[in-house]
Image 1 (spheres, rainbow, N blue to C red):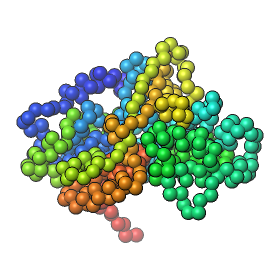
Image 2 (cartoon, protein in one colour; image 1 turned 180 degrees about the vertical axis):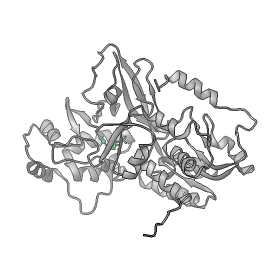
Image 3 (spheres, rainbow, N blue to C red; image 1 turned 90 degrees about the vertical axis):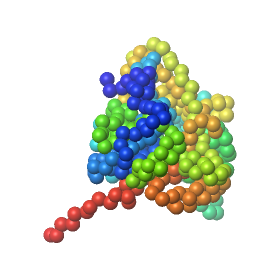
Length: 413
Ligand code: UDP
């Protein structure tokens, strides 16, 4: 069994972590120092090692590798669950798809989400079935759906400038009120009007019966042995990569700088945390919280919900969605486990909050970042962008290319 339960995992992790006052580092110099053992940092370390045989030091504040992709076996049900919410891999980038084949076998999986609205489970994104169920209609062709959408959609003079306009221009006022407005307020503690259009632009609208959540992406799959295993394959058991868990970079930055230990640094943490001593205001991040509920003896093959993710847009519920991981990878267990997701401002930073105030402030940080010698800022938190997993991987691969361009052999023929 490649997955340890969480306790075993943590014991092993604390054995490899350290908090002594003498230097914790095994080498005097690393070609690259990487802050964060999430997707961005792990891809970069792996590239430096596998393609250039260069050494990396990875410092991770948490007690596990994998960043927000980290998964583990739930101790009561033995079901593989993501600690930081469901992660469904999807991409249109062939480069990313080919790259990730090196680290895992992938099980094809197309994600589908249902919304619980007016006591019915309906597909999200909105498609013909959603409209028929919610408005008791009988639309039976894409032409009819196009006509229905046309009469619902709100037309704006210019491109949508916020998430309210984006959603209304796609699904109209009524579906906006049922699906987008209350959910977005719960998720972001802001009205959709206060958020950039890119937030609700993530959810398309269909004029057919396609009920996939990511209809535009040709590659959709789950890692057959989970995400944590991918990170183990990327960065552990590699003599060129030294990983420390439970180490806050800011506690050791002085030592690294004074002893000139890093050839180059890649920072994947929050960009405002990097410059915290400069006294600028803080960027806003939205965080998630998960309430776990085990349902005993439901039956080996049985699930509680009709889909792995059910969204609860209505303000009647304080949570935004429930995730049931048993749906993924055909997992078997006599029990099941549900995670109720709510949002808050306080915890681990998950989502950058795209509004004008934050984007303007980010630009100031970005200008400072560009001047920071020998440091590159990588990933969702450092770029203050709502990256999906594939975008994080692509961003890391491209940054690696810029810093360590591979020799291109030209053939004369
Ligand atoms: N959204 C919504 N209702 C839904 C699903 C999504 O209003 O039923 C909005 C909400 O603002 C959310 C955004 O669309 O933050 C993006 O949704 P997605 O499911 O991509 O969010 P993620 O899975 O990244 O949290």
